[in-house]
Length: 285
Image (cartoon, rainbow, N blue to C red; front, side):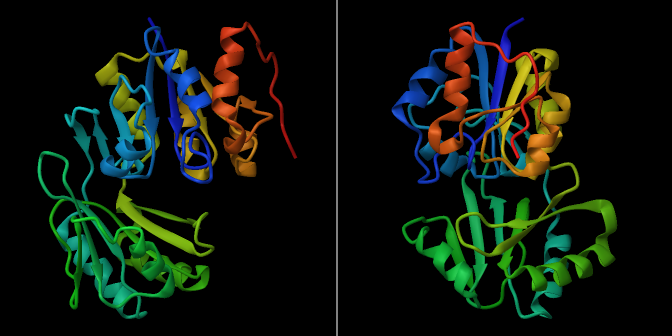
Protein backbone atom coordinates (compact mmCIF):
# COMPACT_ATOMS: atom_id res chain seq x y z
CA UNK A 1 0.00 0.00 0.00
CA UNK A 2 1.24 3.50 -0.86
CA UNK A 3 2.58 5.92 1.69
CA UNK A 4 0.31 8.91 2.33
CA UNK A 5 1.03 12.52 3.20
CA UNK A 6 -1.55 15.04 4.43
CA UNK A 7 -0.55 18.58 5.36
CA UNK A 8 -2.19 21.51 7.04
CA UNK A 9 -2.03 24.72 4.99
CA UNK A 10 -1.71 27.96 6.99
CA UNK A 11 1.63 28.29 8.79
CA UNK A 12 2.56 24.75 7.76
CA UNK A 13 2.56 24.34 3.97
CA UNK A 14 1.74 27.93 3.02
CA UNK A 15 4.28 30.62 3.72
CA UNK A 16 3.16 33.57 5.82
CA UNK A 17 2.48 35.56 2.64
CA UNK A 18 0.05 32.77 1.61
CA UNK A 19 2.16 31.48 -1.26
CA UNK A 20 3.60 28.05 -2.00
CA UNK A 21 7.20 28.29 -3.15
CA UNK A 22 8.30 26.75 -6.43
CA UNK A 23 10.69 24.58 -4.42
CA UNK A 24 7.86 23.20 -2.27
CA UNK A 25 5.71 22.54 -5.34
CA UNK A 26 8.56 20.68 -7.03
CA UNK A 27 9.35 18.44 -4.06
CA UNK A 28 5.71 17.78 -3.08
CA UNK A 29 4.71 17.01 -6.67
CA UNK A 30 7.61 14.58 -7.05
CA UNK A 31 5.66 12.25 -4.72
CA UNK A 32 2.49 12.29 -6.83
CA UNK A 33 2.99 8.97 -8.63
CA UNK A 34 4.24 7.02 -5.63
CA UNK A 35 2.11 8.40 -2.78
CA UNK A 36 -1.33 9.57 -1.73
CA UNK A 37 -1.30 13.35 -1.26
CA UNK A 38 -3.88 15.64 0.31
CA UNK A 39 -4.42 18.62 2.61
CA UNK A 40 -6.37 19.41 5.78
CA UNK A 41 -7.39 23.02 6.31
CA UNK A 42 -9.89 25.39 7.86
CA UNK A 43 -10.21 27.13 4.50
CA UNK A 44 -13.01 26.81 1.96
CA UNK A 45 -12.90 24.80 -1.24
CA UNK A 46 -12.59 27.94 -3.36
CA UNK A 47 -9.72 29.46 -1.41
CA UNK A 48 -7.93 26.13 -1.16
CA UNK A 49 -8.03 25.69 -4.93
CA UNK A 50 -6.63 29.20 -5.40
CA UNK A 51 -3.71 28.52 -3.07
CA UNK A 52 -3.06 25.00 -4.40
CA UNK A 53 -2.74 25.85 -8.09
CA UNK A 54 0.02 23.67 -9.48
CA UNK A 55 0.16 21.50 -6.33
CA UNK A 56 -0.59 17.78 -6.68
CA UNK A 57 -3.58 16.50 -4.70
CA UNK A 58 -4.77 12.99 -5.56
CA UNK A 59 -7.09 12.21 -2.64
CA UNK A 60 -10.13 13.86 -1.04
CA UNK A 61 -9.37 17.05 0.89
CA UNK A 62 -10.32 17.91 4.47
CA UNK A 63 -11.82 21.41 4.26
CA UNK A 64 -13.51 23.89 6.60
CA UNK A 65 -12.01 22.25 9.71
CA UNK A 66 -13.46 18.89 8.63
CA UNK A 67 -17.00 20.10 7.92
CA UNK A 68 -16.45 19.22 4.24
CA UNK A 69 -14.57 16.34 2.64
CA UNK A 70 -14.36 16.77 -1.14
CA UNK A 71 -12.16 16.03 -4.16
CA UNK A 72 -10.54 18.56 -6.48
CA UNK A 73 -13.18 17.50 -8.99
CA UNK A 74 -15.91 18.72 -6.62
CA UNK A 75 -17.15 15.30 -5.57
CA UNK A 76 -18.54 15.60 -2.04
CA UNK A 77 -17.43 12.70 0.16
CA UNK A 78 -18.87 13.88 3.49
CA UNK A 79 -20.39 16.93 5.16
CA UNK A 80 -20.99 17.93 8.77
CA UNK A 81 -23.56 20.72 8.96
CA UNK A 82 -24.91 22.92 11.73
CA UNK A 83 -28.68 23.30 11.61
CA UNK A 84 -30.42 26.56 10.76
CA UNK A 85 -32.11 26.46 14.17
CA UNK A 86 -28.77 26.21 15.98
CA UNK A 87 -27.40 28.98 13.80
CA UNK A 88 -30.22 31.37 14.63
CA UNK A 89 -29.83 30.70 18.36
CA UNK A 90 -26.07 31.37 18.16
CA UNK A 91 -26.68 34.63 16.28
CA UNK A 92 -29.14 35.74 18.96
CA UNK A 93 -26.68 34.97 21.77
CA UNK A 94 -23.96 36.99 20.04
CA UNK A 95 -26.33 39.88 19.37
CA UNK A 96 -26.87 40.28 23.12
CA UNK A 97 -23.14 41.05 23.34
CA UNK A 98 -23.42 43.29 20.26
CA UNK A 99 -21.27 41.07 18.04
CA UNK A 100 -22.26 39.19 14.90
CA UNK A 101 -20.58 36.32 13.03
CA UNK A 102 -19.52 35.33 9.58
CA UNK A 103 -21.48 32.29 8.41
CA UNK A 104 -20.14 29.89 5.78
CA UNK A 105 -22.60 27.47 4.19
CA UNK A 106 -23.07 25.27 1.14
CA UNK A 107 -24.98 27.07 -1.62
CA UNK A 108 -25.29 24.15 -4.05
CA UNK A 109 -23.96 20.68 -4.85
CA UNK A 110 -21.34 22.20 -7.17
CA UNK A 111 -19.53 23.37 -4.02
CA UNK A 112 -20.54 26.99 -4.40
CA UNK A 113 -20.19 28.64 -1.02
CA UNK A 114 -22.28 31.27 0.71
CA UNK A 115 -20.59 33.77 3.04
CA UNK A 116 -23.16 35.72 5.10
CA UNK A 117 -22.37 38.63 7.41
CA UNK A 118 -24.15 41.37 9.32
CA UNK A 119 -23.90 45.02 8.35
CA UNK A 120 -22.88 45.54 11.98
CA UNK A 121 -19.14 44.85 11.83
CA UNK A 122 -16.18 45.37 14.13
CA UNK A 123 -12.81 46.59 12.82
CA UNK A 124 -11.42 43.07 12.45
CA UNK A 125 -14.36 41.93 10.35
CA UNK A 126 -14.26 45.05 8.20
CA UNK A 127 -10.61 44.38 7.43
CA UNK A 128 -11.31 40.75 6.51
CA UNK A 129 -14.14 41.75 4.18
CA UNK A 130 -11.77 43.94 2.18
CA UNK A 131 -10.11 40.71 1.05
CA UNK A 132 -13.45 39.42 -0.24
CA UNK A 133 -14.54 42.62 -1.99
CA UNK A 134 -14.73 40.95 -5.40
CA UNK A 135 -16.21 37.63 -4.27
CA UNK A 136 -19.75 37.09 -5.52
CA UNK A 137 -20.58 34.60 -2.76
CA UNK A 138 -20.47 37.21 0.06
CA UNK A 139 -23.75 38.77 1.16
CA UNK A 140 -24.46 41.29 3.92
CA UNK A 141 -27.71 41.64 5.88
CA UNK A 142 -29.17 44.29 8.16
CA UNK A 143 -30.84 41.48 10.11
CA UNK A 144 -28.62 38.41 9.87
CA UNK A 145 -30.38 35.05 9.93
CA UNK A 146 -28.91 31.59 9.54
CA UNK A 147 -29.13 29.74 6.20
CA UNK A 148 -29.46 25.99 5.72
CA UNK A 149 -26.40 23.69 5.45
CA UNK A 150 -24.03 25.71 7.65
CA UNK A 151 -20.41 24.60 7.60
CA UNK A 152 -19.27 26.91 10.37
CA UNK A 153 -20.01 30.12 12.25
CA UNK A 154 -17.02 32.37 12.98
CA UNK A 155 -16.76 35.35 15.33
CA UNK A 156 -13.76 37.68 15.33
CA UNK A 157 -13.15 39.92 18.35
CA UNK A 158 -10.99 40.39 21.42
CA UNK A 159 -10.42 37.27 23.51
CA UNK A 160 -12.39 38.44 26.56
CA UNK A 161 -15.67 38.95 24.75
CA UNK A 162 -15.31 35.69 22.83
CA UNK A 163 -14.68 33.80 26.07
CA UNK A 164 -17.94 35.22 27.38
CA UNK A 165 -19.82 34.31 24.21
CA UNK A 166 -18.37 30.80 24.16
CA UNK A 167 -19.63 30.28 27.71
CA UNK A 168 -23.14 31.41 26.78
CA UNK A 169 -23.27 29.13 23.72
CA UNK A 170 -21.92 26.16 25.67
CA UNK A 171 -24.56 26.73 28.33
CA UNK A 172 -27.23 26.16 25.67
CA UNK A 173 -25.65 23.47 23.49
CA UNK A 174 -23.14 21.74 25.76
CA UNK A 175 -20.93 19.22 23.94
CA UNK A 176 -23.37 18.84 21.03
CA UNK A 177 -21.28 21.42 19.14
CA UNK A 178 -17.54 21.98 18.68
CA UNK A 179 -15.95 25.28 19.77
CA UNK A 180 -12.52 26.54 18.73
CA UNK A 181 -11.26 29.71 20.44
CA UNK A 182 -7.79 30.65 19.23
CA UNK A 183 -5.60 33.58 18.18
CA UNK A 184 -6.12 34.83 14.62
CA UNK A 185 -2.59 34.70 13.23
CA UNK A 186 -2.98 37.38 10.57
CA UNK A 187 -5.19 39.98 12.32
CA UNK A 188 -3.97 40.16 15.91
CA UNK A 189 -7.36 39.34 17.40
CA UNK A 190 -9.03 36.03 18.36
CA UNK A 191 -11.65 33.98 16.59
CA UNK A 192 -14.37 31.69 17.89
CA UNK A 193 -15.41 29.00 15.43
CA UNK A 194 -18.55 26.93 16.04
CA UNK A 195 -18.95 23.65 14.15
CA UNK A 196 -20.77 20.33 14.13
CA UNK A 197 -19.35 18.20 16.94
CA UNK A 198 -17.71 15.82 14.45
CA UNK A 199 -16.29 18.53 12.18
CA UNK A 200 -12.59 18.17 12.85
CA UNK A 201 -9.44 16.89 11.19
CA UNK A 202 -9.54 13.60 13.10
CA UNK A 203 -12.94 12.64 11.68
CA UNK A 204 -11.76 14.04 8.35
CA UNK A 205 -8.74 11.72 8.34
CA UNK A 206 -11.05 8.76 8.93
CA UNK A 207 -13.30 9.78 6.02
CA UNK A 208 -10.36 10.30 3.67
CA UNK A 209 -8.73 7.03 4.70
CA UNK A 210 -11.90 5.12 3.78
CA UNK A 211 -12.36 6.95 0.49
CA UNK A 212 -8.72 6.71 -0.64
CA UNK A 213 -7.72 3.41 0.94
CA UNK A 214 -5.14 4.95 3.26
CA UNK A 215 -3.34 2.78 5.79
CA UNK A 216 -3.15 5.09 8.81
CA UNK A 217 0.12 3.49 9.90
CA UNK A 218 1.64 4.60 6.59
CA UNK A 219 0.20 8.11 6.87
CA UNK A 220 2.42 11.10 7.66
CA UNK A 221 0.73 14.37 8.65
CA UNK A 222 2.18 17.87 9.00
CA UNK A 223 0.78 20.66 11.18
CA UNK A 224 1.39 23.64 13.41
CA UNK A 225 -1.70 24.41 15.48
CA UNK A 226 -4.04 22.90 18.04
CA UNK A 227 -6.65 21.83 15.48
CA UNK A 228 -4.01 19.47 14.03
CA UNK A 229 -3.73 17.39 17.21
CA UNK A 230 -6.61 15.08 16.25
CA UNK A 231 -4.93 13.96 13.06
CA UNK A 232 -1.59 13.72 14.87
CA UNK A 233 -3.14 11.11 17.16
CA UNK A 234 -4.33 8.95 14.25
CA UNK A 235 -1.41 9.07 11.83
CA UNK A 236 1.53 6.69 11.88
CA UNK A 237 3.87 9.69 11.84
CA UNK A 238 3.10 13.25 12.92
CA UNK A 239 5.42 16.14 12.08
CA UNK A 240 5.39 19.69 13.46
CA UNK A 241 7.07 22.56 11.63
CA UNK A 242 9.56 24.64 13.61
CA UNK A 243 7.05 27.47 14.12
CA UNK A 244 4.36 25.17 15.56
CA UNK A 245 2.49 25.75 18.81
CA UNK A 246 4.33 24.31 21.83
CA UNK A 247 1.60 21.73 22.49
CA UNK A 248 1.76 20.57 18.87
CA UNK A 249 5.53 20.10 19.10
CA UNK A 250 5.05 18.07 22.26
CA UNK A 251 2.51 15.78 20.54
CA UNK A 252 4.54 15.34 17.34
CA UNK A 253 6.76 12.40 16.52
CA UNK A 254 9.17 14.77 14.77
CA UNK A 255 9.72 18.51 15.11
CA UNK A 256 11.41 20.02 12.07
CA UNK A 257 14.32 22.43 12.15
CA UNK A 258 12.62 24.60 9.50
CA UNK A 259 9.47 26.72 9.61
CA UNK A 260 6.74 27.16 7.03
CA UNK A 261 8.59 30.19 5.65
CA UNK A 262 11.66 27.97 5.24
CA UNK A 263 9.76 25.25 3.32
CA UNK A 264 9.90 22.85 6.25
CA UNK A 265 7.53 20.27 4.75
CA UNK A 266 9.38 20.17 1.43
CA UNK A 267 12.80 19.98 3.10
CA UNK A 268 11.62 16.96 5.09
CA UNK A 269 10.21 15.25 1.98
CA UNK A 270 13.40 15.94 0.03
CA UNK A 271 15.35 14.42 2.90
CA UNK A 272 13.28 11.25 2.67
CA UNK A 273 14.12 10.92 -1.01
CA UNK A 274 17.80 11.35 -0.20
CA UNK A 275 17.69 8.69 2.50
CA UNK A 276 17.76 11.11 5.46
CA UNK A 277 16.02 9.67 8.51
CA UNK A 278 15.24 11.02 11.96
CA UNK A 279 15.63 8.23 14.47
CA UNK A 280 14.34 10.12 17.49
CA UNK A 281 12.04 12.94 18.35
CA UNK A 282 13.42 16.46 18.41
CA UNK A 283 11.82 18.92 20.79
CA UNK A 284 12.53 22.60 20.16
CA UNK A 285 12.07 24.98 23.09
